[in-house]
Amino acid sequence: MTLLNNILPEQRRGKLKALLEAGKTVRVLEAHNGLSGIIANMVEVTGESDGQAVVRQFDAIWESSLTDSASKGHPDIEVVTFDSRLHSINEILAVTDKPMIVDGDTGGDANTFEYTVSKLERAGVSAVIIEDKVFPKRNSLEAGIQQNLQEPEVFAQKIRRGKSIQKSSEFMIIARIESLIAGKPMEDALNRATQYLQAGVDGIMIHSKSKNPNEILEFAKKYQVILDDLNLKKPLVCVPTTYNKITEDELSSAGFNIIIYANHLLRSSYMAMMETAKVLLRNQRSLEADPLCTPVREIFKTVGFLDVKEKDQQDEQTSNIPVIIPAAGEDLVLKEILNGKPKAMLEIGGKTLIDHQIQSLSNANLADITVIAGYGKDNLHAEGINILENPGYQKGSVLNSLLIAKEKMTNGFIMLYSDILMEDHILSKLKECKEDIVLVADNSTQYHQPEEGNILDYIISKNHYKPARREIRFISENVVANIGNKINPETATHEFIGLARFSKTGAEQFLETYSDVVSNFTGRFQESADISKLNFTDLIQEMIDRGFAVHYIEIHKGWLEIHNADHIALAQKSFST
Image 1 (cartoon, rainbow, N blue to C red):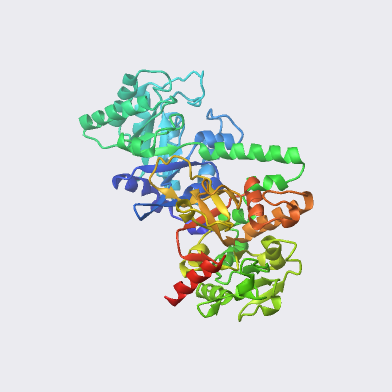
Image 2: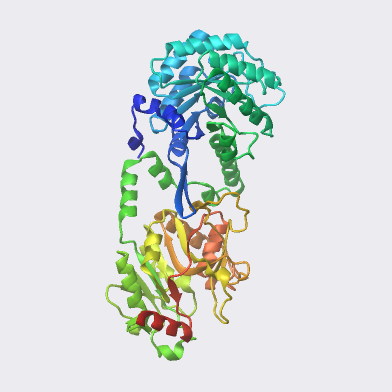
C-alpha cells in the first residue's frame, strides 16, 4: 500500500547525506513515474552468504532527465519544462520513502538554478546533479553530437548561487563533469573538479561514454589527491551505463560513493512493451502475450488498490490453503501388499500413509484437504478429508485426478502426491513462498544413482550451469528450466518430490494453460504419448515453454516416497526409531 511510504520532506531530505556519512556505497535506480518509483523503492533480492542472510535493495532513486523526457515522448534537450519535471518528481515522492537525487540538466542560468534549488529542497529531494554544459544541453550518450561545455568559472558561480539559496545543510548540489564526454583531456576534468570543489559543491560526478572504465578509474584516483590537497571529503558519483562490466565492489574500491543505474527501468519497459505489441499483432489475440505481462492483480497490489489489497492480504495470511491429494491410481508394484486397498491406506508405523499426511498438514495448519479416489475407493477413509472420485482414473493420469478438484483451486492450492512422507519444516517453508508457482525439489539426486525401475520426475535448474561471479545465490535464481521423467539423470539438478504450491495467479495460469492445451492439441505432447495421458509435469513444462515462471525451493533430506517394499521397510524403521 503506497500510503505506507508516506514521509515528510524534512524526514527524507537528509537520508542521502546520512548514508554517505555512515560510509555506505549508495546504490541508486532510475525512476520516471510513480510506478517505476515504487519498484525502485521496494524491489529487493534475498540470498545467503556463509550461512548469513543477505538482502540487497536500492538505497535511493534517480529522477532522470532522459527517462522523464522519453516517457513524455520528447528528446533529452531540456525541452521539458522544470515545472513538468517537478510534477514527475512529486509523483514519485508521493509513493516512496527513499532519498531522491534529481538530474538537473544544466540547471539553466544562475537565476533559474536558485529557484530550482529552492523548489527541490522544499519538496524533500536530497540532491540535484547539474552538468557543466551550455544550455540547452544535448544528451551525453549519443555519438556524433557537439557537446559545448560552460566555462568552469561561470559554472562555479552557478554552484555558489545555488548553495547560497538553500535553507538546510542536508540538501546537496553535485557537479557533473562532462569533459570526457566532450573529448577533453583528463587534465580539463580534474581542473574543473578543483574549481567546483572550491566553489562549495557537495560532490562530483564524472561522466563517460567509453565502454572501458579505465578513464573514470583514473579520474577517481586523481580526484582523491585533489581532496587530500584541499583537505575535503566530498563524494564521487558514477553512472556505469556504457562501462557496464565493472562491478559495484570494484567501483566502491576505486573510491566511488554513489553508483547510479540511470535509465534501465525505462529501457527495459520499452523493450517489453514493443515485444508485447508485436505478439498481439502476430496472434490477433492476447493469450500469447499473457506470459509477458504482469498479472493485473499484482499491479493492484503494488499501487495500493485497497479492496484487492485487502483480499490479497487475506489470501496470504490464511493458513487454510486448500490441499489436493491425487490418490486414484492403482500401484502395480505394491499390488499384493495392498490387497485391493489404495496406496494411501498403506500402513507405516501403525498409521496409514494418508493419516501421516493429514498429521503433517495439520501441523502446518492446513485443514482443507481433498483426496481424489479411484482404485479401491471404497477402502479409502480418514478423518478430516473430503473425498472426490475420478471414475476415469484408469485412462488418465495424476493431472486428470488433480483436476477433479478444479473448484478448490480458485484462490490457490497445494498439491501433494499420495505416497509422500515428509518432515514438517518442508511444508512450513513452502507456505512462506511468495512466488506464483513453487515446486519442492530435492538436490540430492546429483549425488546418487537412481534406483532401477524407479521412475522419478527430474528437474534442471535454469541457472545451475551459469558461472557464478558472486558467492551469494539469490532466491530469485531458483527457476525451473526443464521437468520430466525422461530427463537424463546425469544432467538433472534436482528431483521433484510431488509437492507444489500455486498462488491464485499461479492457479489461473495453470488452468488456462491446461484448457488451451486440451482444446487445441492432439496426439503426442511433451513427454506424454497422447494428450489424454497428459501428466502434471508435462503441463508444468508447457507453462515454462510459454514463458511462465516456475520456481522451486530446494531441500536435501526430510522426505520419503513409497515406491517399493524397500521404501516401506525404510519408512517403518524411521517411524519405529
